[in-house]
Length: 430
Image: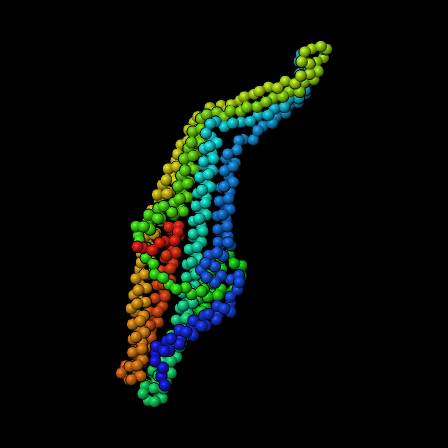
């Protein structure tokens, strides 16, 4: 008795899910990521590039207290090789302590520069994390697609085995020709070859994921946990508005521009002198003559000094340099913003296009191809169509199923890239 094609399809799908679930359970390990959140968490904790970016942020933060600090006080000591004889006694040693105080506003300008640089570093770290998450998602979704493609190939292999059996039975019953059996066997060999190619692709994609996760192990990762696809839509105008406001690369350039402006203020302060205040203490011995007032009394002297900012051309050049750096940062920001917006528009096109393909293949073409395959098998068994029509229907179904899964994968990857550019998860379009 021949089973209807829809029952065979259901049985093959169930067996495919069961085999993948069993393989996943066999390779499951407590330290091995399973879901997308597991992969993201593992990458955030272990990725070397992200750790380096975090340390760069710490470097910038530790620069702030250094910028706030006064210059180190200067201690001086002098020894009189020949003692200076004074009325109150011979002077033997001299001790001095001097503290420089930068001109008003210099420390604040330095601190503002360091603080803005630290904030820029935090945004660079955020951008690195978003880039890493996008890489993880891209590889994860590709790995998920591979698992589904292998599953579909196995389903179609089982179908072809069924068709080959039908052709053989009809050939034995003299209801079909020998070429039908040969065609079925040729198609079987082609599907088996494609299946082996897909299975061989598992190792390099797994290695790609391991590299992003900074895992030392070269073991093949288990198949990702299959998640239900939820269609999403994104509003273009809202996306661009969010991108201008939240993109970390643009925000980093904003803070770098602030740091450059603070450097302009610092350069202007170089035209003014720094003030130094200190104390000098001179050790004095007892007077040679007895009865001298203040004999042996050690003098203490309050000292002031300033540097002389006389090299005006140098200071003007430093100020012009700082202003040029501000203009450079502004132009860099405009260039980066334009490129990111153009990239977002291109990615959004791919995202919308994949949404359209998902509806086309999922709602229309795949169901129609399944219906065509079932009708073709019935017609072939009834002798109203030849075996080529049946094989063509099977090829069409395989092609549409893979195109649907490819569209789902592209959609998820494009959404991940959009969220990387925006810097946050995107809300649903009203």
